[in-house]
Length: 101
Length: 167
Image 1 (cartoon, rainbow over the protein chains, first blue to last red):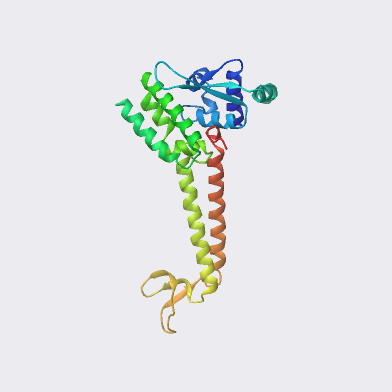
Image 2 (cartoon, rainbow over the protein chains, first blue to last red):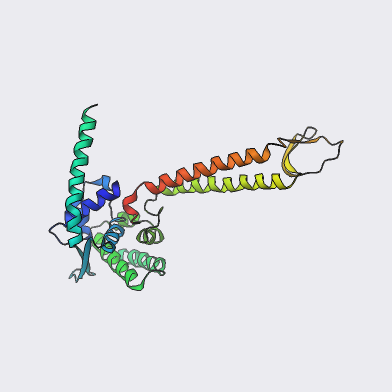
């Protein structure tokens, strides 16, 4: 479940934005439960790129090595809406169950 | 000092990615270099290198190899490995006990010794085989228990922290 949540979080922060790895991590700061960190974000981005949900391009940087910017593909945009709907329903169902205690 | 640490890490990472597609490996190395320099600029290089783990473990994460995502999994995987080895040992005991009649668990009431192995005691010897009929079955049972526990531990280790396992 955490893998799906991490992927949904990455798709969400890339929705409408083109970001590089550290910017993605900064947008996700505070969401420690996702398990995303400096050591895990790039393998996940690579997998999502391989699956065609995100695309990337290199941009030269004036301060150091080039940066790789990620953006959503059409496939990623198509996946985001149903994933977000599922998550909202799941969250609502879990809240209902937990509040019944 | 930061540059030296980054260079050393990238060299090790390049070696660990040597079996990967050349362009893919270069992509990972360039992005890692960019990330480490940016973190060094923020004064967070040590913390970042610690989070990434060894270059070998970090490279394995790109291949989706389970077990490499979290250093916390390693003790569980090690325990699983020990249990599987013990399962193989018990299976070996069961097979040998089944095939070789003189193999077994022998005790000697005079010396108080207990030996697992081959023995051909004389009729006057104090050596006696214990569990002669049951050693193979008991070993097989213990083997299955160890194998089952090892499998459960390995499955739990692979199931945890799966955000870093892109498989």
